Length: 196
Image (tube, rainbow, N blue to C red):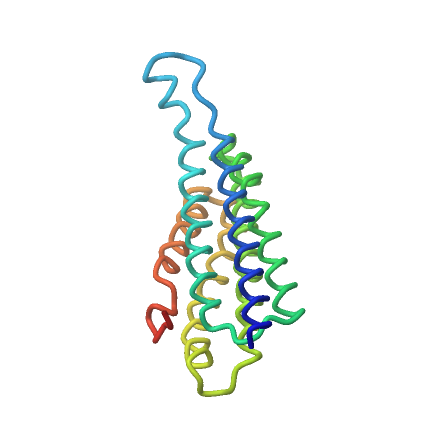
C-alpha cells in the first residue's frame, strides 16, 4: 500500500510542477505596453483576456485533477500515461493563448484554441477512466463517474461545437469555451462525497 501511495504522490507532485510551469510560461507572455498612457494598456486587452480564460482553465484542471486523485487507489502504467497525455495537452495551452491573444477575432486561432480545450477534455476524461478502472462498481468513484460522465459529454459536445462555429462567429465559439469552464468550476467530486 505504501508503494502505491508513493507512486501516487510522485505523480501528483510531478503534475503540480508541470502545471505550475505552464502557468508561469503563460504569464511570461504578458508583455508590458510600449506606450506610457492608458490607451497603450487598453490595447492589450485581447492578450489579457486570453490569459485570464486560460489561467482559469488551467486552474480548474488542477483543482479537478487534485480531487480526482483523492479517489485513486492504484497508479499503474495506464494511469501514468493517461496523466502524461493530459499534461501534454495542457502544455499546449500557452502557445494557443499567445496565438489567440494576437488574433482574437480570427477564425483559425479561435478554432485552434477551442480544439486544444477539446483534446484536453478528452485527455482528462481518459485519465478519469484509467483511475476508475481500479474501482469496484458501486463504490464512491463509480458513483461519481456516472455523474461526471454526463457533464463530460456535455463539455466535449460544446467544445466540439466551438471548433466549427469559430469559422461562423468567433465570439460564439469563445463563449462556448468559457461556458464549459463555468460548468467545471465546481468539481464533480464536490457534488459527491469527496475524501479529505
